[in-house]
Image 1 (tube, rainbow, N blue to C red):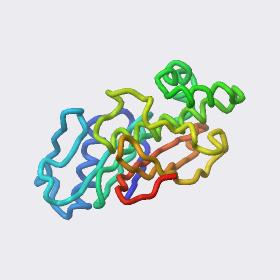
Image 2: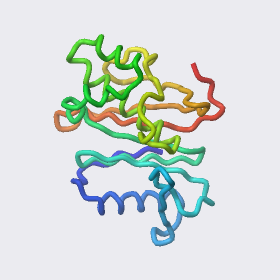
Image 3: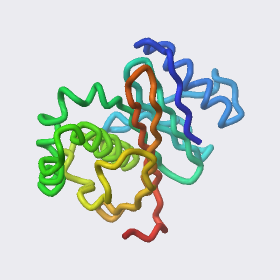
Length: 194
């Protein structure tokens, strides 16, 4: 399941309460029986892995995205195109060379949206892998994504990163004159990649 919540301001406490409420519902347990820990890369996870439930979350500009899965690791990221617009050129320098080339070849008006699409997918996949962006952003190389600058809706993609397979799904939402882009990456060990 994937949930998007709005109107949270920048309150870490409100985001934490919301996450615990979702975990309580997903696990059918009282919130007081749920404990979260972090792995060596800082990824949040259940202290008791017994339930076989994975989750990840992301927030920006009063928005919170929560992804949950009973099938394996999951990653989530959320951004607005407006938030990406002033930083995309500097941040894209960390991308794979082919991704940078594709962005550079686009019309200037298309670049922030394409960057936001790449960024959210990369971050979601790396969070699902459990590394986050600590090891860099050259992988996964998403330069082969068709119609990178096309307007949404976008097709789900399948990718292979270091032998791990993932399915990436994007969600978009126009909100207060900003386009919200969210990506969810699900571990998919049996998925055929293209």
